[in-house]
Image 1 (cartoon, rainbow, N blue to C red):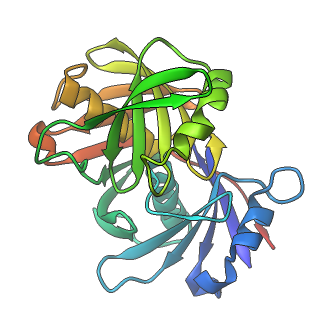
Image 2: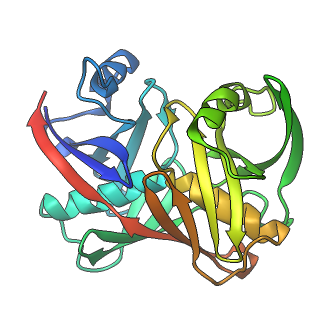
Image 3: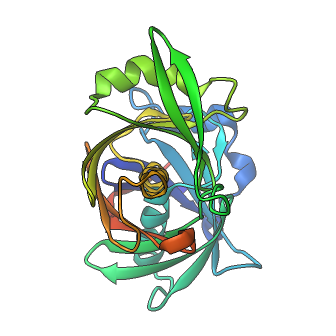
Length: 267
């Protein structure tokens, strides 16, 4: 099978295309874990498969590094769009991409920059996320429950580092309050339009950036008054910055940043 490796701010994926003979049935959990293992496989945070769609221009299917399937990835979406461009698909205008988190619109802006929509948060109608008080190891956290096509737990507080997220993220990810697990965001607000973010990703662990986590953070922050609607929010992560714009009443969410090709191969 031919593959291409891409990354969005260090969040890396192996991409495959059904038009080159790849099918979803080939990606068993065991095979996905083998391919994504950094020591003995190719190494990646996840796998993306392009297939045809009867609802959109393309369909993107996503597997996490642990072999589980996921609904959507913001960084993955941007990598997917650049992959389409590199493989010769028409990306001259706005395109639609079917995901497990719904159909998203995307546009390649050139020079590796991609902008896409993302799902509105599950609390869009009520205007505020549910707050959960959860315990992990030796601390309790106020966690905002946010679903933007996939589940997240957003924690606002002082600046946290990767070792902190590695300590407290795993048990929060698997807390019974999240029946399907959750990505856990540790957020430090710097201003009305910027924050620092470290993410423990469901099924992948620490990643250098999380697109959907950035969206969940921006939506939760707008809802509780940390950020402004209709204004790009710079979400700074170890791999770089994602820019999220949340429309008033959460009617549209957009993410924008870069994606890059790393290499291609056959497996």
